[in-house]
Length: 73
Image 1 (cartoon, rainbow, N blue to C red):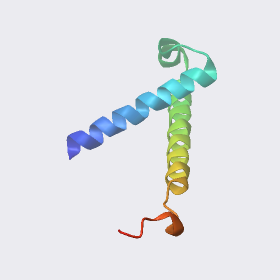
Image 2 (image 1 turned 120 degrees about the vertical axis):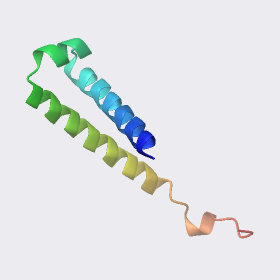
Image 3 (image 1 turned 90 degrees about the horizontal axis):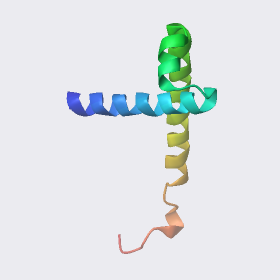
Image 4 (image 1 turned 90 degrees about the vertical axis):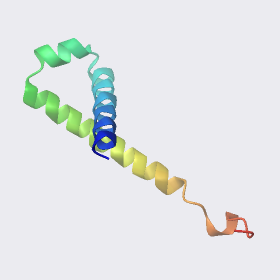
C-alpha cells in the first residue's frame, strides 16, 4: 500500500512539474535551479490542486445516468 501511494504521489508531482513547465515556458532544470524553492512549491501545489479538481469534474461527468443503466444489472 505504501509503495502504491508513493508511486501515485510521484506521478502526481511529475505531472504537476510538466504543467508548471508548460505554463512558465522554463525547463525543469531552470525551474529547480533558478526559481526560489517557495515559489516552485507554491506553483506545484496549485498545479496538483488543479489536476485534482479536473479529475473530480471528469468523474462527475462520467457518473452513469439512471436512465442509461442496463436494466439487466
